[in-house]
Amino acid sequence: MQTPGCLKAVKAPTLRLDLDERRAAALSRLLRNVTWPDLIAYAGDVEEALLMRDALDTIGRTLVLGEAGRSGRRGSSRRR
Image (cartoon, rainbow, N blue to C red):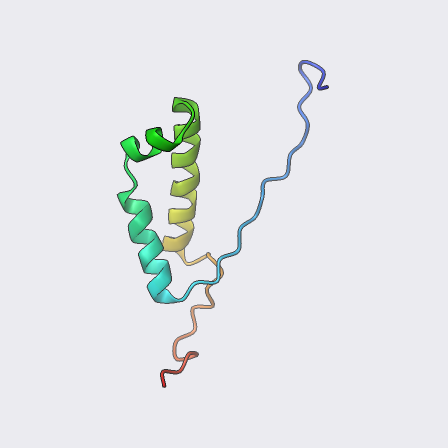
C-alpha cells in the first residue's frame, strides 16, 4: 500500500520498432486517422482516451523524427 503523498518512481516503458519505410508510413497514416470517437469507443473513460491520444501522438512524433529504430540507410535492402 502506498502512503498518501509519496510517489513511487515508475520507469516508463521503452518501445523499439524496427519498421521499413512502407510500414512506418502505414503506421503514421493510421495514427493520423485515429479519431476522438475511436478512442472513446475503446477507452474506459475520457481520462483514458486522453492518455491513449497522448501515447499515439508520442509514437507519431517519433516516427516523423525518424527515431523509431530505423537505421535511415538507403540501399541497405535488396529487391529480388
